Image (cartoon, rainbow over all chains, first blue to last red; front, side, top):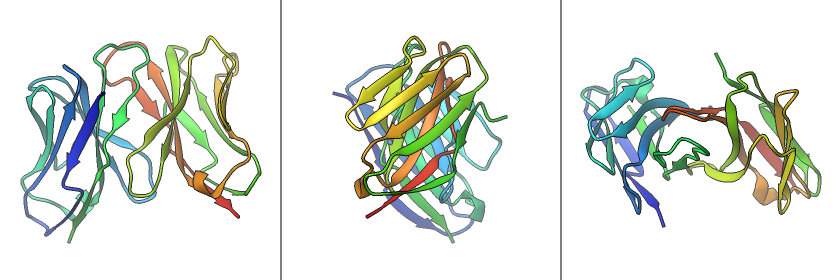
Amino acid sequence: SQTIHQWPATLVQPVGSPLSLECTVEGTSNPNLYWYRQAAGRGLQLLFYSIGIDQISSEVPQNLSASRPQDRQFILSSKKLLLSDSGFYLCAWSMGSASGNTIYFGEGSWLTVV
Amino acid sequence: QQQVKQSPQSLIVQKGGISIINCAYENTAFDYFPWYQQFPGKGPALLIAIRPDVSEKKEGRFTISFNKSAKQFSLHIMDSQPGDSATYFCAANLQTGANNLFFGTGTRLTVIP
């Protein structure tokens, strides 16, 4: 069965520091990968998605970037964090085929920028 | 532009009651409608899903009602329990592309004993 791992689970970082959140998927190949952000008590905002290695699409302009160095690895990064980057970050995956494209989420990473 | 509109934003239901969350969409190209359940501090998890060729799908106490002509679908939670207290997201999926799942804004359900 497929599993998704995301780490770290919680993170407190000072303003201006770098960020790296990692996500890996097991049990499948060539998945679509996603990074979402969820502000406290709010909805899901899609940040990035990827259909393959080094193929990243950004949904919103921001202080963050994403990379996919391996088929089942997705990394969210920032060179200098802003206070507004605080939130709950969710990695997710789906099958490469389009129909019934259920997205499966990881457990999330709480980021607090202080 | 919000592709999927969800209401209400929050809902308080007595234990044993029926919780109803509504969603509406405009794009008739959507072909798959999942609902996700999210507990505090956790990632959303797929709860139940429906395709537009059926009008209702039931799994235990959870039922999706789908009205294709009205472009609306809803989640009904029968005999609501305190353990159902969570945020619920509806979503709609396009048939093609990778960025093809559009979420509603979420409904925070609280079931009081």
